[in-house]
Length: 194
Image (cartoon, rainbow, N blue to C red):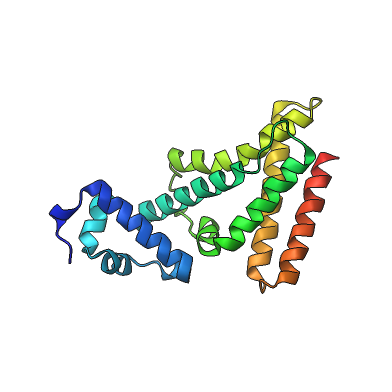
């Protein structure tokens, strides 16, 4: 077992997050247990709670990192100037990310804070950045609607993609279902432009 003096708290935090992500990626959110994480990194449960306030705090950090990874993945689809294909490509990349990172992506929606517990601002910023990626191309293509209307359209489009991804992941992930989901996304992005 590692000694506390071998790693700084920042290093332990990073180790915990990486081990937790590995567990979720391989076995899903329901398999995430603090004792399993501690065993995987060679530290005690108490060491984990020295860097995270509680399990919800750890879960929110894992989810924020998933939003960050999704944002980086989707950014590769941005083109200048924006075209209708830009939005379609962002939406299709979102679906690809959700399939390739199913456990982590599902955790975004499976883990919920207790009713009344506030969602941390730093977490909201990470999730909103993903929604913001769709805002810029729609704004560039649509000069007739207000910024609030464009923001709403971007959110509706991204939530449509999330719904399609969730439906796909709840079914058997065959090539046929993935192809059908991609067709639905293409239709959805086209419909938002009309």
